[in-house]
Length: 137
Image (cartoon, rainbow, N blue to C red; front, side):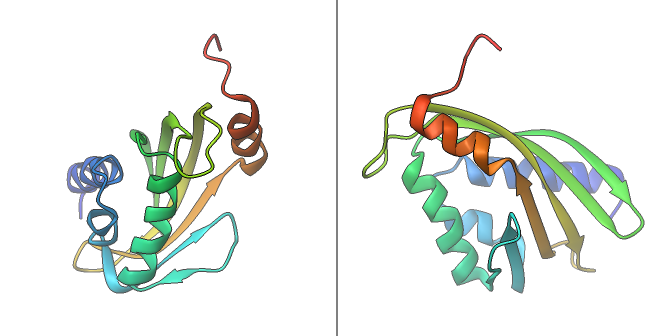
């Protein structure tokens, strides 16, 4: 894939996160692809990835994932993103969140994600869940 194709794929991936349908997120992964968030246990396979995406969509039903930029490297792609939304899911605080991070992708020959290592500041996320985001910054 060239930069244009990866950029278009990234736009579709961000849109999938905004779709309220976690299977759309999982469809961007190879059938046995994996998603690991902040060094946790990997979600392997589309069913597990669907479940991981659903957990964010449940906690933050109005989640919006913005595609910020790409970093192309010989060994993979960094998909940089920002997500926003309100924690109104079951047991939610009602607070707004705005968190930036990136996923380090290894892509297959078919253009699907074989492995994604997701990274964001979990302490910032937890603080925003508890207290909300400062919208002035």
